[in-house]
Image 1 (cartoon, rainbow, N blue to C red):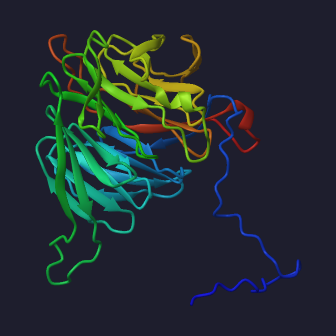
Image 2 (spheres, one colour; image 1 turned 90 degrees about the vertical axis):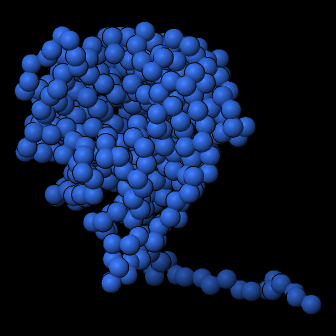
Length: 385
């Protein structure tokens, strides 16, 4: 019979020989800090006219991935030291980038239409999927699935990633994917935006339709749990949920909040439990471009781009803006908070072609990143660009 050993003596180490390594430990996010308001650094992403359509920090805040309009993907180390790693596998503009929860992989979608999954150590994609035109995509359910929005459908894919390559058949990928489930919008309208949480187990997926509605899918039941008709006067172009951060915890009720943004109709804060708008933010300008918004990791602030050459930061409890981040030369399209540090990155667009009143503008752009930090954390070494 097996008997556990209960008299095992523990090894002891003297204080003189014991060393403590805290380099790999997670630090707590300083939620008591003020919102970022001081420019910290200024970065030119590309020297040629192009657009940065999407950006996202990794879960540990150590890396930043950007999807460009010239079909390339850039990977920066935070805080933006050295040249970025460049990944080329698409033939058209990259419209979405997303990190996995384990931070080993990141995906990109393009107007090809293809979806590529990358690892930082290889210049070739680990997995390439050829599908119908993809509106957006992300990892889902702690990386168990790939979640795609295409047309009026939500699609869940199971996948297996294999980084090994055959030297003779090096272009034959060993990674695989398989469609596991597909759900459709209730009215059959095309999906314009999607949001789902991958940092913890969540079976709720938010989608916005071209019919101005927001629909909530319950993936546990495989049905639509709630629908908000006419959520905005225009189609919603951006949805984002308050998912917090690995470095900061929030009240449970805070995770029921999400944001929606539509052209000419401002930014709305919703409560998922009641499916009602609880606050509106309209101090920024958003008349023609798809400006995005983001929650801070502590859940106290909201940042959004604007067409008046500024980025705005709101206190989540007030409709009036808290900070107006200037020093941008053009429209601020995208914003992103660092999940580990009180930093904000903002991306601008420089238009070189005139705006036509009959259609959306076709623009040639040069993208730059501006990084902001709280004024209370500025030291002698911090200088404005």
